[in-house]
Length: 178
Image 1 (cartoon, rainbow, N blue to C red):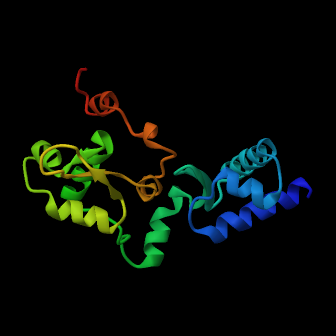
Image 2 (image 1 turned 120 degrees about the vertical axis):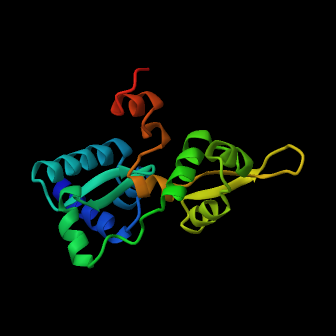
């Protein structure tokens, strides 16, 4: 398969998938070696960025996904008629941040940090599949432990958890001395 055809197939697969596709999956479908597939993907990502397209290809949640260009967000929202319904409440965002940075974590630890009951936000995050139950902690009562999911990475456009901002970055953004 020539390069242009391979790039077209990659675009079609990413567009139709709706979720991130791993390099392994893509290389197997295209019957290419991994380095060739990664090179083609890097070229495609660059081409989309250079032409400032309405669509981009992003490395998300351990794979590649076609996404809308954030610069087009106002028009996409207008097209949809309202703000995107996937917005999270402040308590849910607080809870999600705690789980993301402290995982694996139990409900009592989340509540100790937040200072309030977190049943509702945890339930919401589980329903939206942004967090999952990782198992039970080996302590009396064997409470459930929570952690983030692949959907969490997709929701925030992250490759992996290492892309989360550090505490130092938050403090610098707020102008607080570290």
